[in-house]
Amino acid sequence: MKCPICKKTTVWEGNPDRPFCSERCRIIDLGNWSAEDYRVETALPDTEEKAEIPHE
Image 1 (cartoon, rainbow, N blue to C red):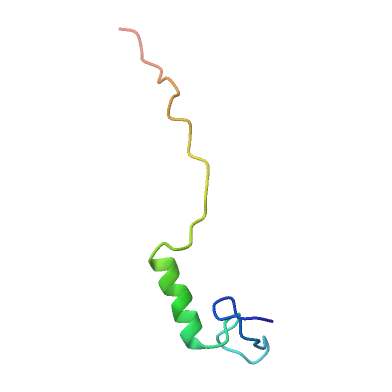
Image 2: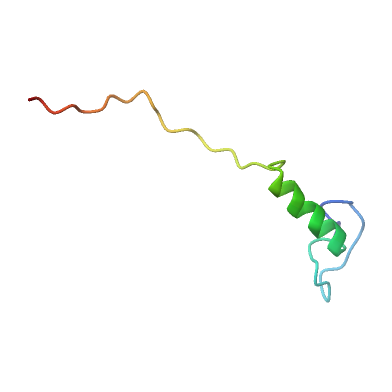
């Protein structure tokens, strides 16, 4: 398999940093998440819905 960061071929079994090839690539990936370079897109809720106002 290939490391998702550097694309170097790496092994799964016996690799404590899998799916990365090394601790360096694992830390780079963590930094990318921390810097919000990766995002999971979701639909925003409809904010135009009318709130029900109780009649006085």
